[in-house]
Image (cartoon, rainbow, N blue to C red):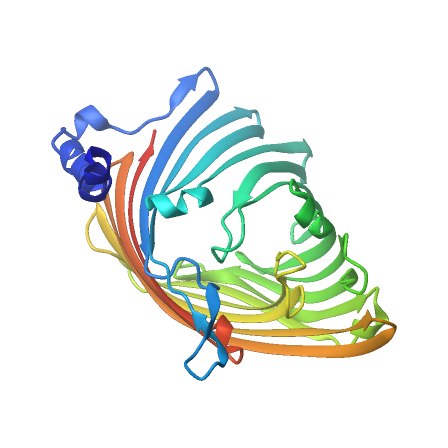
Length: 427
């Protein structure tokens, strides 16, 4: 009884109580600063977030029988409250023009409802980054990211999925004269599940990107990019989704002299060739991305982002009813405003058009049948947050977001509200 009283009456006000308590200290006694040992900088941090969602598992449903004896599918809405705890430690060591950085992060997700404790997860993240200037104009950056993580399922009949993934990224850059920059980037992604039932979804993804940029103005570059991608997954028979893709892109990066408008634009075509010839459509895919920030004043910034990409669902084969990839067109518009030195806010509006297409054939009892599953989702939503930076190293955030997913497959439609309170310590 005492524990239940603590969970439901004390915990919701814990973060607020800590904020009020810390605000009583003077500014001088809580100044920010990293820990220094010679050139080594040690930067610990802690983020504690409390979230409440009125529909935490949007894919939940059950089949019931009505009074006429007909079966029908009914959506289940499950409210849930979770606490996310993320401590991290960053070590930074600069030497001459070079630098080495090591980051460790731990993430704990704890459900406050006793019936949902089986979905509690713990994840470990470690990243090392070396940036080295070999000769004048020639720079190499090597980054290795390793995760031992657990994923919360999207419906309560599923289980927590444990996996390990590793991403190695090598970026070399060379300045040709005063205006040209050439870049070569290599990235290798490897995913391995722990549980046997998910091992058919183990995958490898290799991407090679080459770019040439030309400086047309002091802070503006235009260039061409050629990407090669190889996607391989240990598919089950009859569900081969492996492919090779080529991207041909035009890039523009700019930052106007007065500093009011900056961002990047990219557009081009993507040519995907599947190993299973039955999946090839014979056409190219048009892709684009845009990130723009307009500083209306020293207090207000307008942010626009847009994407049209081919995305992988990262779903287990048994869940990917509509294919392992989909076309995603995303648009978002945000307004960021600084009210005072310590208080700032942001509001965002988002729109997404997701189109799934799963084509193939199955053989049962010697009879082969083709299938073509089509699905389209329109996702709209908005979010808002208010930040209070009490001290240089202590911050507090409250947020709200609303998502409305309308799908031509009724069982995939859902609405969700999410409330967030967060306190962060960055030393």
